[in-house]
Length: 281
Image (tube, rainbow, N blue to C red; front, side):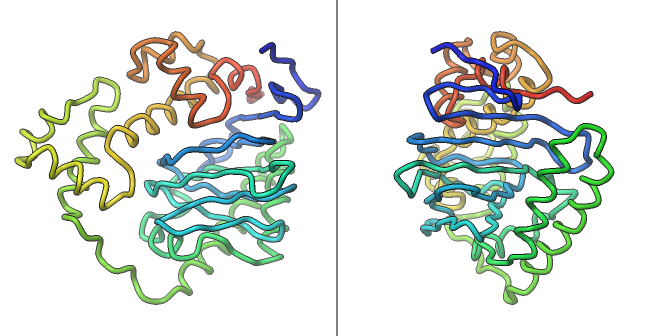
């Protein structure tokens, strides 16, 4: 399907659907992603960044940490890194969302457990501040304002998460082995590592590795690798690299292989995603 550039710099595909993505010059922000989807449903996937989400129209239904959640208009949703989640329209007309992805310099990984326990925050002040943050991020030259607003947003998010009290209970299914496998997968993300090789390196049976990883993180090792590779591909596409080159650099077999997984996890093929990216001045 042909893609046309919308007036706001977004890329349009199917009627009523559009996406816009860019990386602002604001420390701690890895990506800004605006989208309107009418039917598209995200499969289970992970990010290596915090997902700060607001929905402007419609609603999203999603699973996180094996529990169902939703996003009414007055809610701010904070999805932690490394925890699988999906997403689908909860209303007939789909949903329009705005997302900021934040690295660990803004929110530390010690807050992941609290975010899993309660990702949807009903806080009108926070909702207003996140909207103001998006407005600043969309304007070139207003990076200082965006950084200031992000600081206030981060402070309020930490206040919410630190009120949760008791630390989360330890994960079952050998969390240390699962963590070792995740570290190995991360270190070999582009070149790849077979399950048999991983089992030899970690001294565990391949089936036990899969059970331990899936039990700890709620996602199979291969799904984790593909979602991480797609995450890297998003960054390279925002840098302006063509999809064919991105496929090689991120460990995919070829561009078709990248396109299949990218479309599955992002909702649009990499070429359309790149055409909707906005360049920093």
